[in-house]
Image (tube, rainbow, N blue to C red; front, side):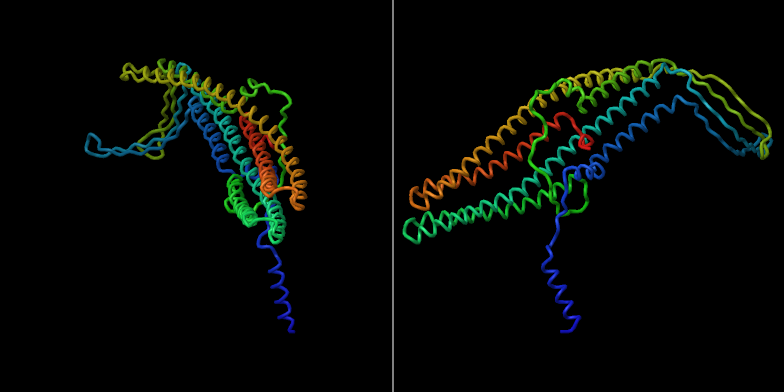
Length: 420
């Protein structure tokens, strides 16, 4: 055999033996780190904080001197019929002296808006954590369901073998055989369905992490609930720190300063102006020029503009106060509900585990009795169906408990940073 042909055969065998794809194994901590960097919703929230910071700097700039430079050249017709040229350059500046502290109030309102945007980031981070956790649990559940379904197929195959032997011996009717075959077909279908669910869950987790390309992912984790349920938490203290409530508090405080700013808008505006430069009919100009002065501005009639702005500011404050109260009530109710659901879900897992243990024991006894003719098919198949259901019910209860834990953490307002 030629060496080139030998190596070609070896490479072909290796290619056939190699799996089509190797799943990337990720722990919950791995997913959190990746989502914190790449999730687009978090990126939008971060930019919102930057924009609020810039808005505050823009507002505060009015408190500082405003300095500008200018250079000019003009030409025009003089009275005698000729032309007259004028050249100038200089620097001018102005400083706000007094505006009834309106700008100061606007700056304070902008500071509160920064705080509101930071709390909004926490709120978004909490939502992202919930979406990420749900996707991780879905993938973990789908992976485990594949294994559970394979166990069920083994049970159904074993049952079919036993019933086939009894049918061939004339000890069982054909309906029992057909039912066993249908149960096996159902189990095989559920296995393929579970495998497809794994792919869907992988897509969901990929999106939640902020990845742009799909990749086969394997979730590495367990179904243990780590949130303690031994003592009822202080719901009032938790609600006070919730990002959604803190956001509404900051928005209310900004509205308070908005009312102050609208009231202070009725005061006159006083500013100081100065300029220095040179001017002449030739370039470069030689004659020095300068000016210093104070200016006062007080609009006498604007069609009720300032009054309308004040009324609007007061309305915004009233709405913000009502929103704060409503948000606090909603947070408290959600905390109570999710806490109760978490306790229910954890206790349900213990119950389902006991049912599975019991049905496994009943199945062993029933199979032995059925094989020697001490139990009818109808009674035996009920016990076997109970075993299959118990396996599924336990897995469903475990996944539901993890989701209930995730909902409780969301209700508390915990963020992705809480996981690091």
